[in-house]
Length: 380
Image 1 (spheres, rainbow, N blue to C red):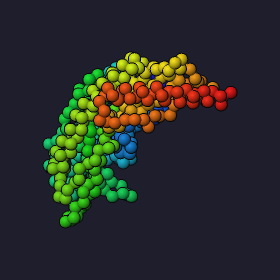
Image 2 (tube, rainbow, N blue to C red; image 1 turned 135 degrees about the horizontal axis):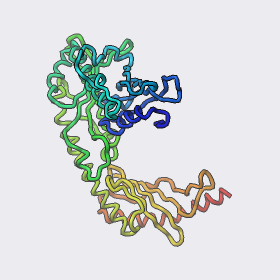
Image 3 (tube, one colour; image 1 turned 180 degrees about the horizontal axis):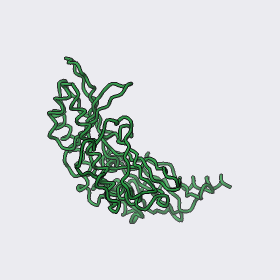
Image 4 (cartoon, rainbow, N blue to C red; image 1 turned 30 degrees about the vertical axis):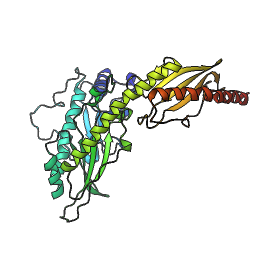
């Protein structure tokens, strides 16, 4: 963010928003609308809504326009053409809101305004979906109405069929608190995205909705939803019937993923017996570690990456010489290719796994040293 190009009052508001928002809000672009083009007083915010922030296709994108000549005034908020009917403060009269009660001295006000608008937008989309004349959708909304955190979005356009998207948060586990030492800034969640086509006519043949599991990006360091197979949606099923079984399966797999951290931790700890203490190690998820090793006078680093499926899947190993360097670019140290073709069995005890890896590397390092020397000869 170009600090020197923004009036201090505007920078304070935007900086507070980006560092304290409970959502992963991003600045899409910044530009100047004042007589002094050196002052950036306008920017577009992209705000996650109903899971579409991943593709940024249906995010609430709005231009936030300050006036660099009068930075103490409240900003103007402009929504995209697809939301021209969204008028959050229309007809409020004398009711106070974050825009009418603007205080330039309070750096929290822009965040309060954006969160207020997001809540209004959520209510606006919920009303749009509720007004759709589709019996199936009305039934789904009534059966899951009491579940907290559900977001919905009505998608329509000239060139595409109408459809309703639901973002359903799954189970109430606080994943952030379940991981000791977690540095996750935002709350980690898993959602079920359910997409229904809008049908304004009664039909005996009702197709299953499109389903997709979506998680917050940071969760992939603990658990990957890419390999998860959604249970089948049976004929005549509704969301209220589908969710309990899905949540039970996910709950079990998340528990296993958390337990596997300790398995990886023990593996890294036992590697210290033949290698010595690691130079670097991931202390939270135990996914990576680097050890210093030597064979005679040849000294090298061993970078170890443990997959989430460890020990079913073996670690990936990369060797890096401490004595051989590429001539260009930047004199980078010579590294091996990723090594995964070595003896491994998930049925071995963790202690045996570490012993086998050490034995393998003491042989493989000779090939790696030869490779390093060959690279140096080619560079002459």
